[in-house]
Image (tube, rainbow, N blue to C red):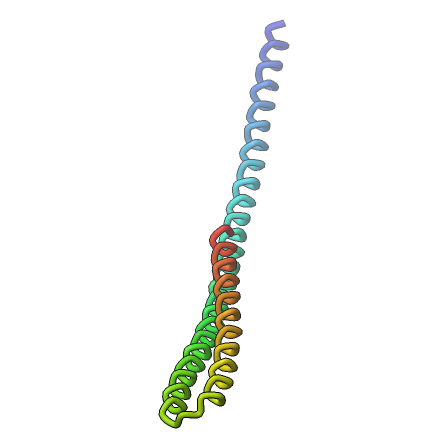
Length: 128
């Protein structure tokens, strides 16, 4: 009976050691997979961040272009108004002023729309 107990105790010890080795092996496999996943997530985040910055820069360029056009039209409108006032052609001046105001209004509307889109993109990028 003493030999049976010793054999059972040795078998139990060997089984526990093998179980511990298997557990450690599984843990190291899971740990290396977790590290790889973290690296992949970091790369994906960096890529998404770069894309968002590029898109935000593009929206900003479009906004700046439209704002420049609107300011240029407004400046031209003021110059025309001044030059026509000195000449005294009130009817032609009023037509051109009306036309320039309509163009200016349309451009301002486009600038406002681009500004709203830019803000929406910024908020969308910020939420990612």
